[in-house]
Image 1 (tube, rainbow, N blue to C red):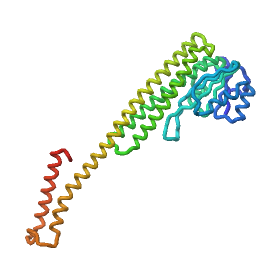
Image 2: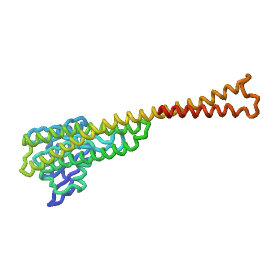
Image 3: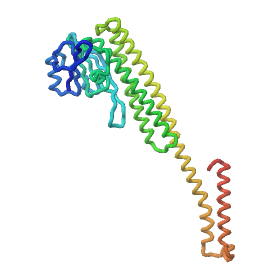
Image 4: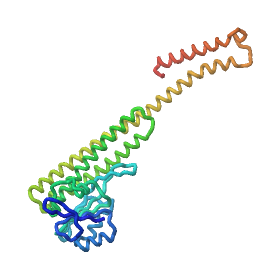
Length: 310
């Protein structure tokens, strides 16, 4: 899918032409024919357009014949799957005339710009727009990290009396998401620092300030991700022990009940034998073994409570 935006005064409008100077071309999960078409009409290198479509591509910067390729990882929400949050490569290609973004899936970062939720951006200001995309990416990492923290707290509430692994598996999936986020954020930080240090993009003073803000926001996301990850690991270990302890307590209770019930069963079994036994010819003699059974059970319960077994 190919979409094209262009600044018209203070507004950003959708256009059809791929050759309009100063426009922004968004490519999402494209076919080979669409990539060739964009490459032919804009002059963007085909290998630059194809690079972000590898979901294992690492964040990096590449410069060739005046064209700049910036690949970063962006956070996404997975609606169907055990892991709720993941990351995908997003390619930003800057040519002499246009800025092009390429990604395997639609994501909230780019959608914010195309759906008019992001303000104060112009498609012809390629450096500023690139930095705004980076800033929005760091912001969404922080947003999803807060969502992960809230979800983990909700799971913890159900874990206190649980004896199943369902909640622990949910926490494990959140831990996977945090690992993906931490790895991607660190890789993104390397790209951002290289942009600041190497002066690959032509930047004015306000652009450098914005890039420093992006780096700060990204660093905050890294620290938050590491803190949440450490807390989650500790929580999983603690609740694994709690689940095991809950199960042990249930087994101990059931064993105690079995022992208590075994005494009346044993006594009444003796009196059910076809041999001469004391008190068997007495009227209402069955009351005697019944009383003995009750007293024996009470004594066992008292002994177990005294030793804190029950």
